[in-house]
Amino acid sequence: MSAITHLRQQYQQKVCHEAIYMKKANIPSMADVGSLLSVQLSQGLLSRLGFEISPIEIKGQTAGKMFEEATRLFLEQSFALLQHLRPGAWYFSVQGDIANFVQYKHLASLSALIQEDRGLRTALGDYVVKPDVIVARWPVTDDMINQQQVIVKAEEAPHFSPFRAVNQRHVQPLLHASISCKFTLRSDRSQNARTEGLNLIRNRKGHTPHIVIVTAEPMPTRLASLALGTGDIDCVYHFALLELVAAAQATQNEAAIESLAIMIEGDRLRDISDLPFDLLV
Image (cartoon, rainbow, N blue to C red; front, side, top):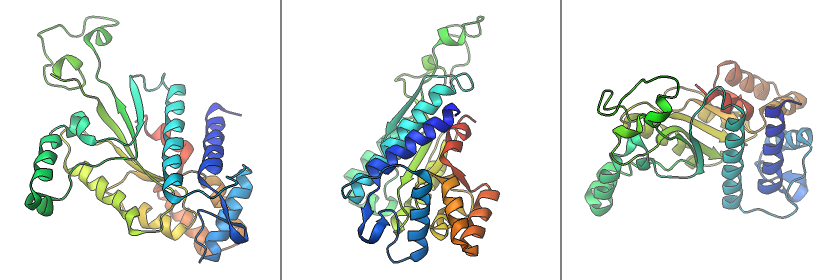
């Protein structure tokens, strides 16, 4: 078994045990009880994973928090394996204010003004996105830059790139990825991920971070509501896409099978194991 497959299984086991439980009538908690297809896909997915689920009921908010933490841990462990491909001082956290990062530090003062002025708050809304999971990279010191030869010297150019730590008055990390974790997609709140993505794109100073969504939603139509279309998010990642595809094929529901195929072939839906590799770019 490869190292990434091992981490994938550990991640799925953690999600199953800490975020999923069985409702009455043998219905998994991520299934929509009003949809037979959703129930079938959820049951088929879990049977293929083969991991134990929680023996007790888990509140929705708690499941969401556990899903975020499991995703953060998976990415941190995966990046540790891939340091030779993308070296750097990386850090991973659950939730955080984008104003703490180089590309969005200008939003801190704007956010303070908005909070103090009800009129501004009504007109402009909240500019500060708080991603569920953050991947960031610390800027580099001159010693790190000059490891093999003298590339930079004190008081010499480049003077403005924030990637060079000496150029920052108060050193802040660079936001590398904003990850929205949606355990299921059963409300309009899931569409907030699109709005957050647009805010990250429009309000940045510098490069745009990766903007992705991670979910355990079993229904292809709901996945499509976020996956289809381009411009506001990079891609949607499923915590067990391979097992979901197999479960869909077992139902022989042509619409579900075709919908998943369209999203996968169109590069709009990928498996969680793809995410750390996509974040290396």
